[in-house]
Image (cartoon, rainbow, N blue to C red):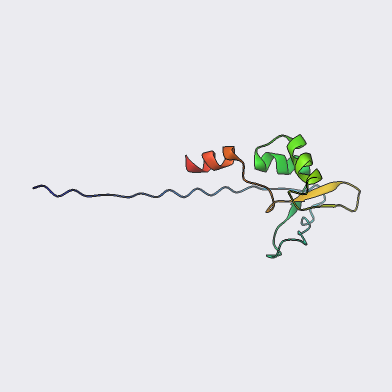
Length: 95
């Protein structure tokens, strides 16, 4: 009888996003996240990271599905850590 071997492989994918600001200052941190290291970004940047249209980000803000706050200049900023993982992102990370 021949012996069979089972080989298991695991692939881990990491994505890095570089977010630059015009002023060169560090982005604000989310006060609602317990880790204290989650950055706040513009809804347009959040849409790129989440892989969804900007209108979806604004829907998440309206339903309070994400952490957000009003910036000093009156604009809205969104917490990166609170962005839901979309199915496209999940699928992309499996490939």
